[in-house]
Length: 402
Ligand code: NAP
Ligand code: MG
Image (cartoon, rainbow, N blue to C red):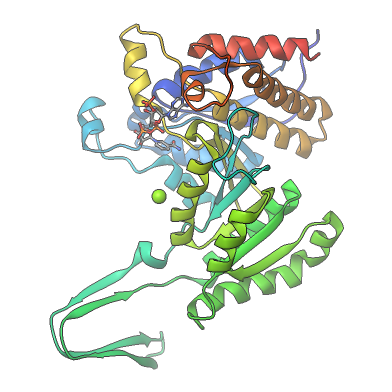
């Protein structure tokens, strides 16, 4: 069989530990035999980040801007223990943080649904994609522990010296104070990324804040979303047959629990932090959660939502067998290949991505899975496979689908 040709390279960001091992297996078993794979390779493994003073991370983000689509392996975010383990020159920043800052993107997390791994919420038949605004609010706050009686004020001094001053509270005893902020630019980028991703995936977009209580702060989020929607996206949404829906956060939570799924839920920073963990744990497994970073101007970076699965890697290093789930990493590749195919009008590539996802799902639904899924499946008969055999089983299913 002739291999599928590619016209534009994918930006390939290699990573660390167990996911680096899976990365290689996925390429060798599931991609290279079928595709004349064109990638621009960046090694984001911690050793190479350290050698290049983390320049490689910046270069990979710039390349993503240039080509439009990247696929990333999970990477170590260094902490004190990693400093000694890898003999690091510096405690390098999280690569995801660096890439997100350069692309100004929003992360969308989406569960992969298979029969036999049922969500805890029984009416969730389709995935719920969660988008979290990743800037500001309580994550960039200033706090004061008020020692005793006194007046707290909110003061803004403009560049020209003029002041806006509001009384927050007149304390009669000890208490607490918190100052938070956001910027119109960051909110607008978030809104555009959400609208673009909704159009891209043909799903409704839900957004919620507490604007009835926070009449300026949260209301500003609501207004910016609505202005951008009316000016740039309304007609496109109508043409695509999808909806933008705004409601209050408590109403959104109640509706999500009763919904069938199949939509994107955009959240402010704190709401997204809380709700993404709730949604992903309710859907079953971190190993079945994909993630895509979408920039406001439509650049995409695909990855798995989980980390480098360190514990399994140490077993692997000791020569022990591992049963690490490669599904989310496979979907990072299929997501990126499909997007590349769409942008280049390469039907063979989009078909390949569809077929590989189908093969992955069918393999699990036939009872062949890794240990993490075997522990949570409702299926009675299960074959637990090791990391490599699971990927080989997917290849077998893939070949049978031809
Ligand atoms: P992790 O890699 O997500 O793994 C935590 C645990 O979840 C694993 O020990 C394993 O449980 C289970 N798990 C996660 N993914 C799995 C998979 N694919 N198959 C089977 N089980 C899976 O998180 P971590 O151990 O806290 O972090 C390890 C490293 O990853 C850290 O250095 C962190 O900085 C990095 N990290 C990177 C990213 C990223 O690049 N996007 C995200 C998060 C963390 P059992 O051990 O019980 O089997
Ligand atoms: Mg959290």
